[in-house]
Image (cartoon, rainbow, N blue to C red; front, side, top):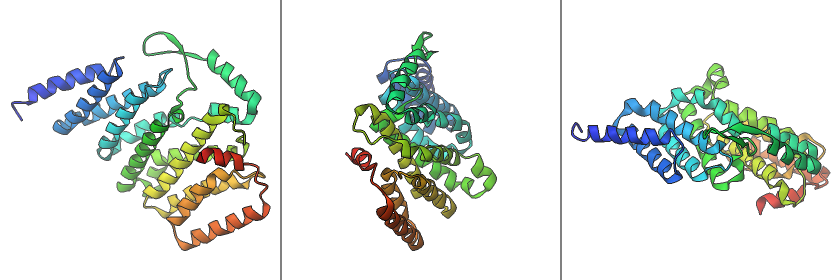
Length: 297
């Protein structure tokens, strides 16, 4: 180890240099891989590696044209590091909230088709200074839900974060739970539920982003419910989904997730789902069936 240590340190410094600046995607991915490997040999660098990798992931997601391959590579490395990074998770919560941001999406849902056209216009008018020093348009803030593979790996990252917090008893204390990433994610999911009844039943591809965003949030809720060893949090996940059915036009898209959680829970929860489904069959006008079919396809 003493013989190879200087070489590994040099490689780490090179990787850290390229990961911290605009580089070719392949070079960034190789640098991220070297950083993750370095954290194994040098545990004292683990915090620095986590921060650099996290920042690289966020930079890739914030690009006008999202660097999907770089973001995915960074997230894969974060998943490997996460079980050892409990103390660093709370600092990541604002960035996770940004990745789940629904402000623009909420406005788009409420405004409908005409609103979608106005939203596109507002997107073009919105600009920011990129890491390259140029004014560039923001592509829907951070729209990771547009990319299926990126949605999947991000959902897995949230699963591992939840598992890490659960394993370290963070979710057992009201105080620590309130400051956890898991609780923050559930809060963001809960804020989306009242809007699901506003989702259009149109097959217009213009609405695919809204559908993708909705499905990502539903999958996150189900993932958290299956990951935690905490009946209160599982019940909270279930109630968040059920709350969307209170509107006059309940969104059918939530039903598979509700049933999925119930099947992994107790008999009483399954009976509750049976009552919910019976009530829907008796009273529902099936306005959103086309939306559900579109999601499944």
